[in-house]
Image (tube, helix red, strand yellow):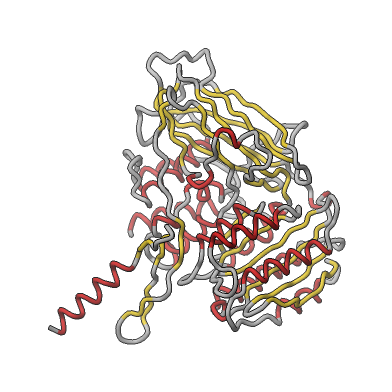
Length: 490
């Protein structure tokens, strides 16, 4: 009887390891041992999504979506695999964020716009009957000396749940890296929140780096989490110190465990939508495991003119705060893509990833409709898998891509266009950009057991990666191979 009870308890814990609540949010319940037995900790929260299906061009030739410049999903997936020796829950896997984590060094060759475009078609490596489309976007680079003056507000969660080394201490180290990158003309204020919000440092010039670091060093964790109050306070301070034609941004660091005041995802999104009208951008930094509210943090960034990153180790701190520092400077906002597929060449298409970034066709020209942002020097990639039409006419473009974006301080969008022809390239003939992004996509489909994974395998992903020769200054692409190898064993 005792063994039966143990079995039933273990079975119940396994059933709880990945569940969905009534709000449509996936709850991943982590387990941790405290002496005898296993205690089920409060769970991470992830939004559910339905994988994009094939759409027949004859019925719906136009596909519209917002770009996504986030990289949080990749770092979170890496932590599951490399640190915790387990595959991530499906809700943690957002293919577009895995792809867009990497710097692909796309060329920038556009004097008229702050973004440049490129694209190509090849055979699909996991289904030879289909083809793969790559759409690339590159944000204009800005030399550090040419960056606009910045008004930053650090909004730091110091509630009780932030007490562990992988949360507040990680953030404190990261923000000190950030301070070292500041120009003397920049300004920084620090707001903290636990049971209530407090101003720890009034807006201070970047020339006073040690004063800012001293304020960061004094932070400690304790209390409940009034996240919404902290957001309101941070935006008020950012507004008080607003720099016209400058870079005004709130940088929030938290596990997202909001439990005082406004705390539901819907209410937080409503709040952040109201605040984005002020012309202030946001960067969301997620930390921790066990009660990480990935669902809310991603949506705060998506709806607040911002981006979302997850911090899992010190090298990730360096990536976010040093190597990718220019991403804190938006060069184009509300970037939308509309692809018009030619039914003579494309029978059906499927957007890979971007499930929660799909827009209605009429949203494309609606300047009131929010979309994604791209930072200075940043690249964005989107992939489509297409079913070719019989007797395709390769003299005609396979599809036309329309883009709309706004300058950071503008409320009116500008248009761009790109035509892509099918040169009938095999996957082996495609660019290294295609090979690399397709490898990541295949890996993502394996992790999520996608119905479209076709002949994908971890060995094939590793083989394709070995065929790629792209710059890898900080070793992140080499690390990706290690992650694939580890996932294969799990």
